[in-house]
Length: 132
Image 1 (spheres, helix red, strand yellow):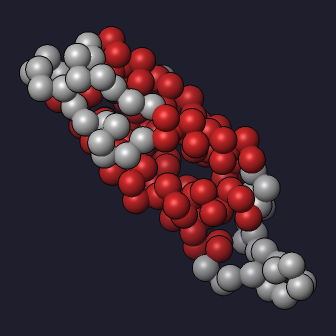
Image 2 (spheres, rainbow, N blue to C red; image 1 turned 180 degrees about the vertical axis):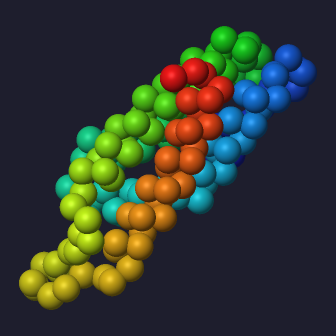
């Protein structure tokens, strides 16, 4: 799901909330995709990594209807929920070890916290637009 896949159709039927939710989702995805992909790979959360890859595949056709937008946002919300659950399952102050048994990067816990907070924000926006 990159900017080109989330390009909005030229019609003006979109309510501002749907438009805003789609913009937030796209911006979050562009900013966090690489970090979360690495993070999920490092902690063996392959179901969350698969959800992230499935999010990459979501797209809208130029002639998409409001129902198509709602369906895309529903599917995205489901995938984001899988990812946030994987982040929540990580122990507090999670650290990594390299293949040689040395400590992993100090920034790992910081990435988990920041990525999780941004993911929570986007999920909250989708929940507001779509209803809980």
